Amino acid sequence: MPSINGLELLKRIKSSSPNVRTILMSAFNFEFDELYRTYSAQGIIDSSIEKPVTIDALCQRIRDEFQVYQLKLLLR
Image 1 (cartoon, helix red, strand yellow):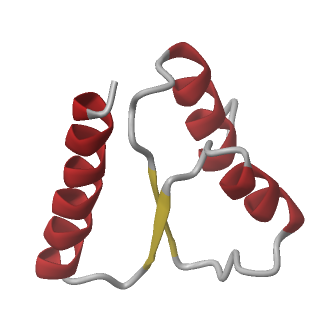
Image 2 (cartoon, rainbow, N blue to C red; image 1 turned 180 degrees about the vertical axis):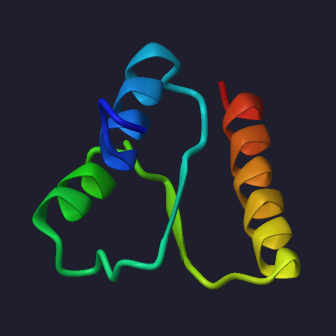
Image 3 (tube, rainbow, N blue to C red; image 1 turned 30 degrees about the vertical axis):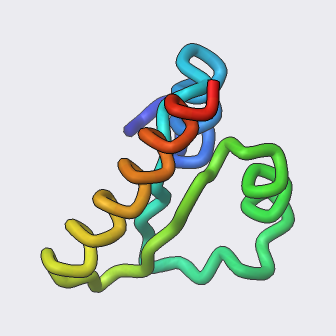
């Protein structure tokens, strides 16, 4: 993405559709990154998964986030 990075993309997605669940996938260890921590606290990043990732682990993370999404819909 020549004009924005992944974190900025997630921020834009969340600002246009707050109910969308976001998963950050990266080989970079974001755990101590200030922007990552801020975005996580603000709910811009709902989940993260480290590369390399197996298809099973990715599918499970997506199922987990989908369950959270469905639960939030029910609680409205």
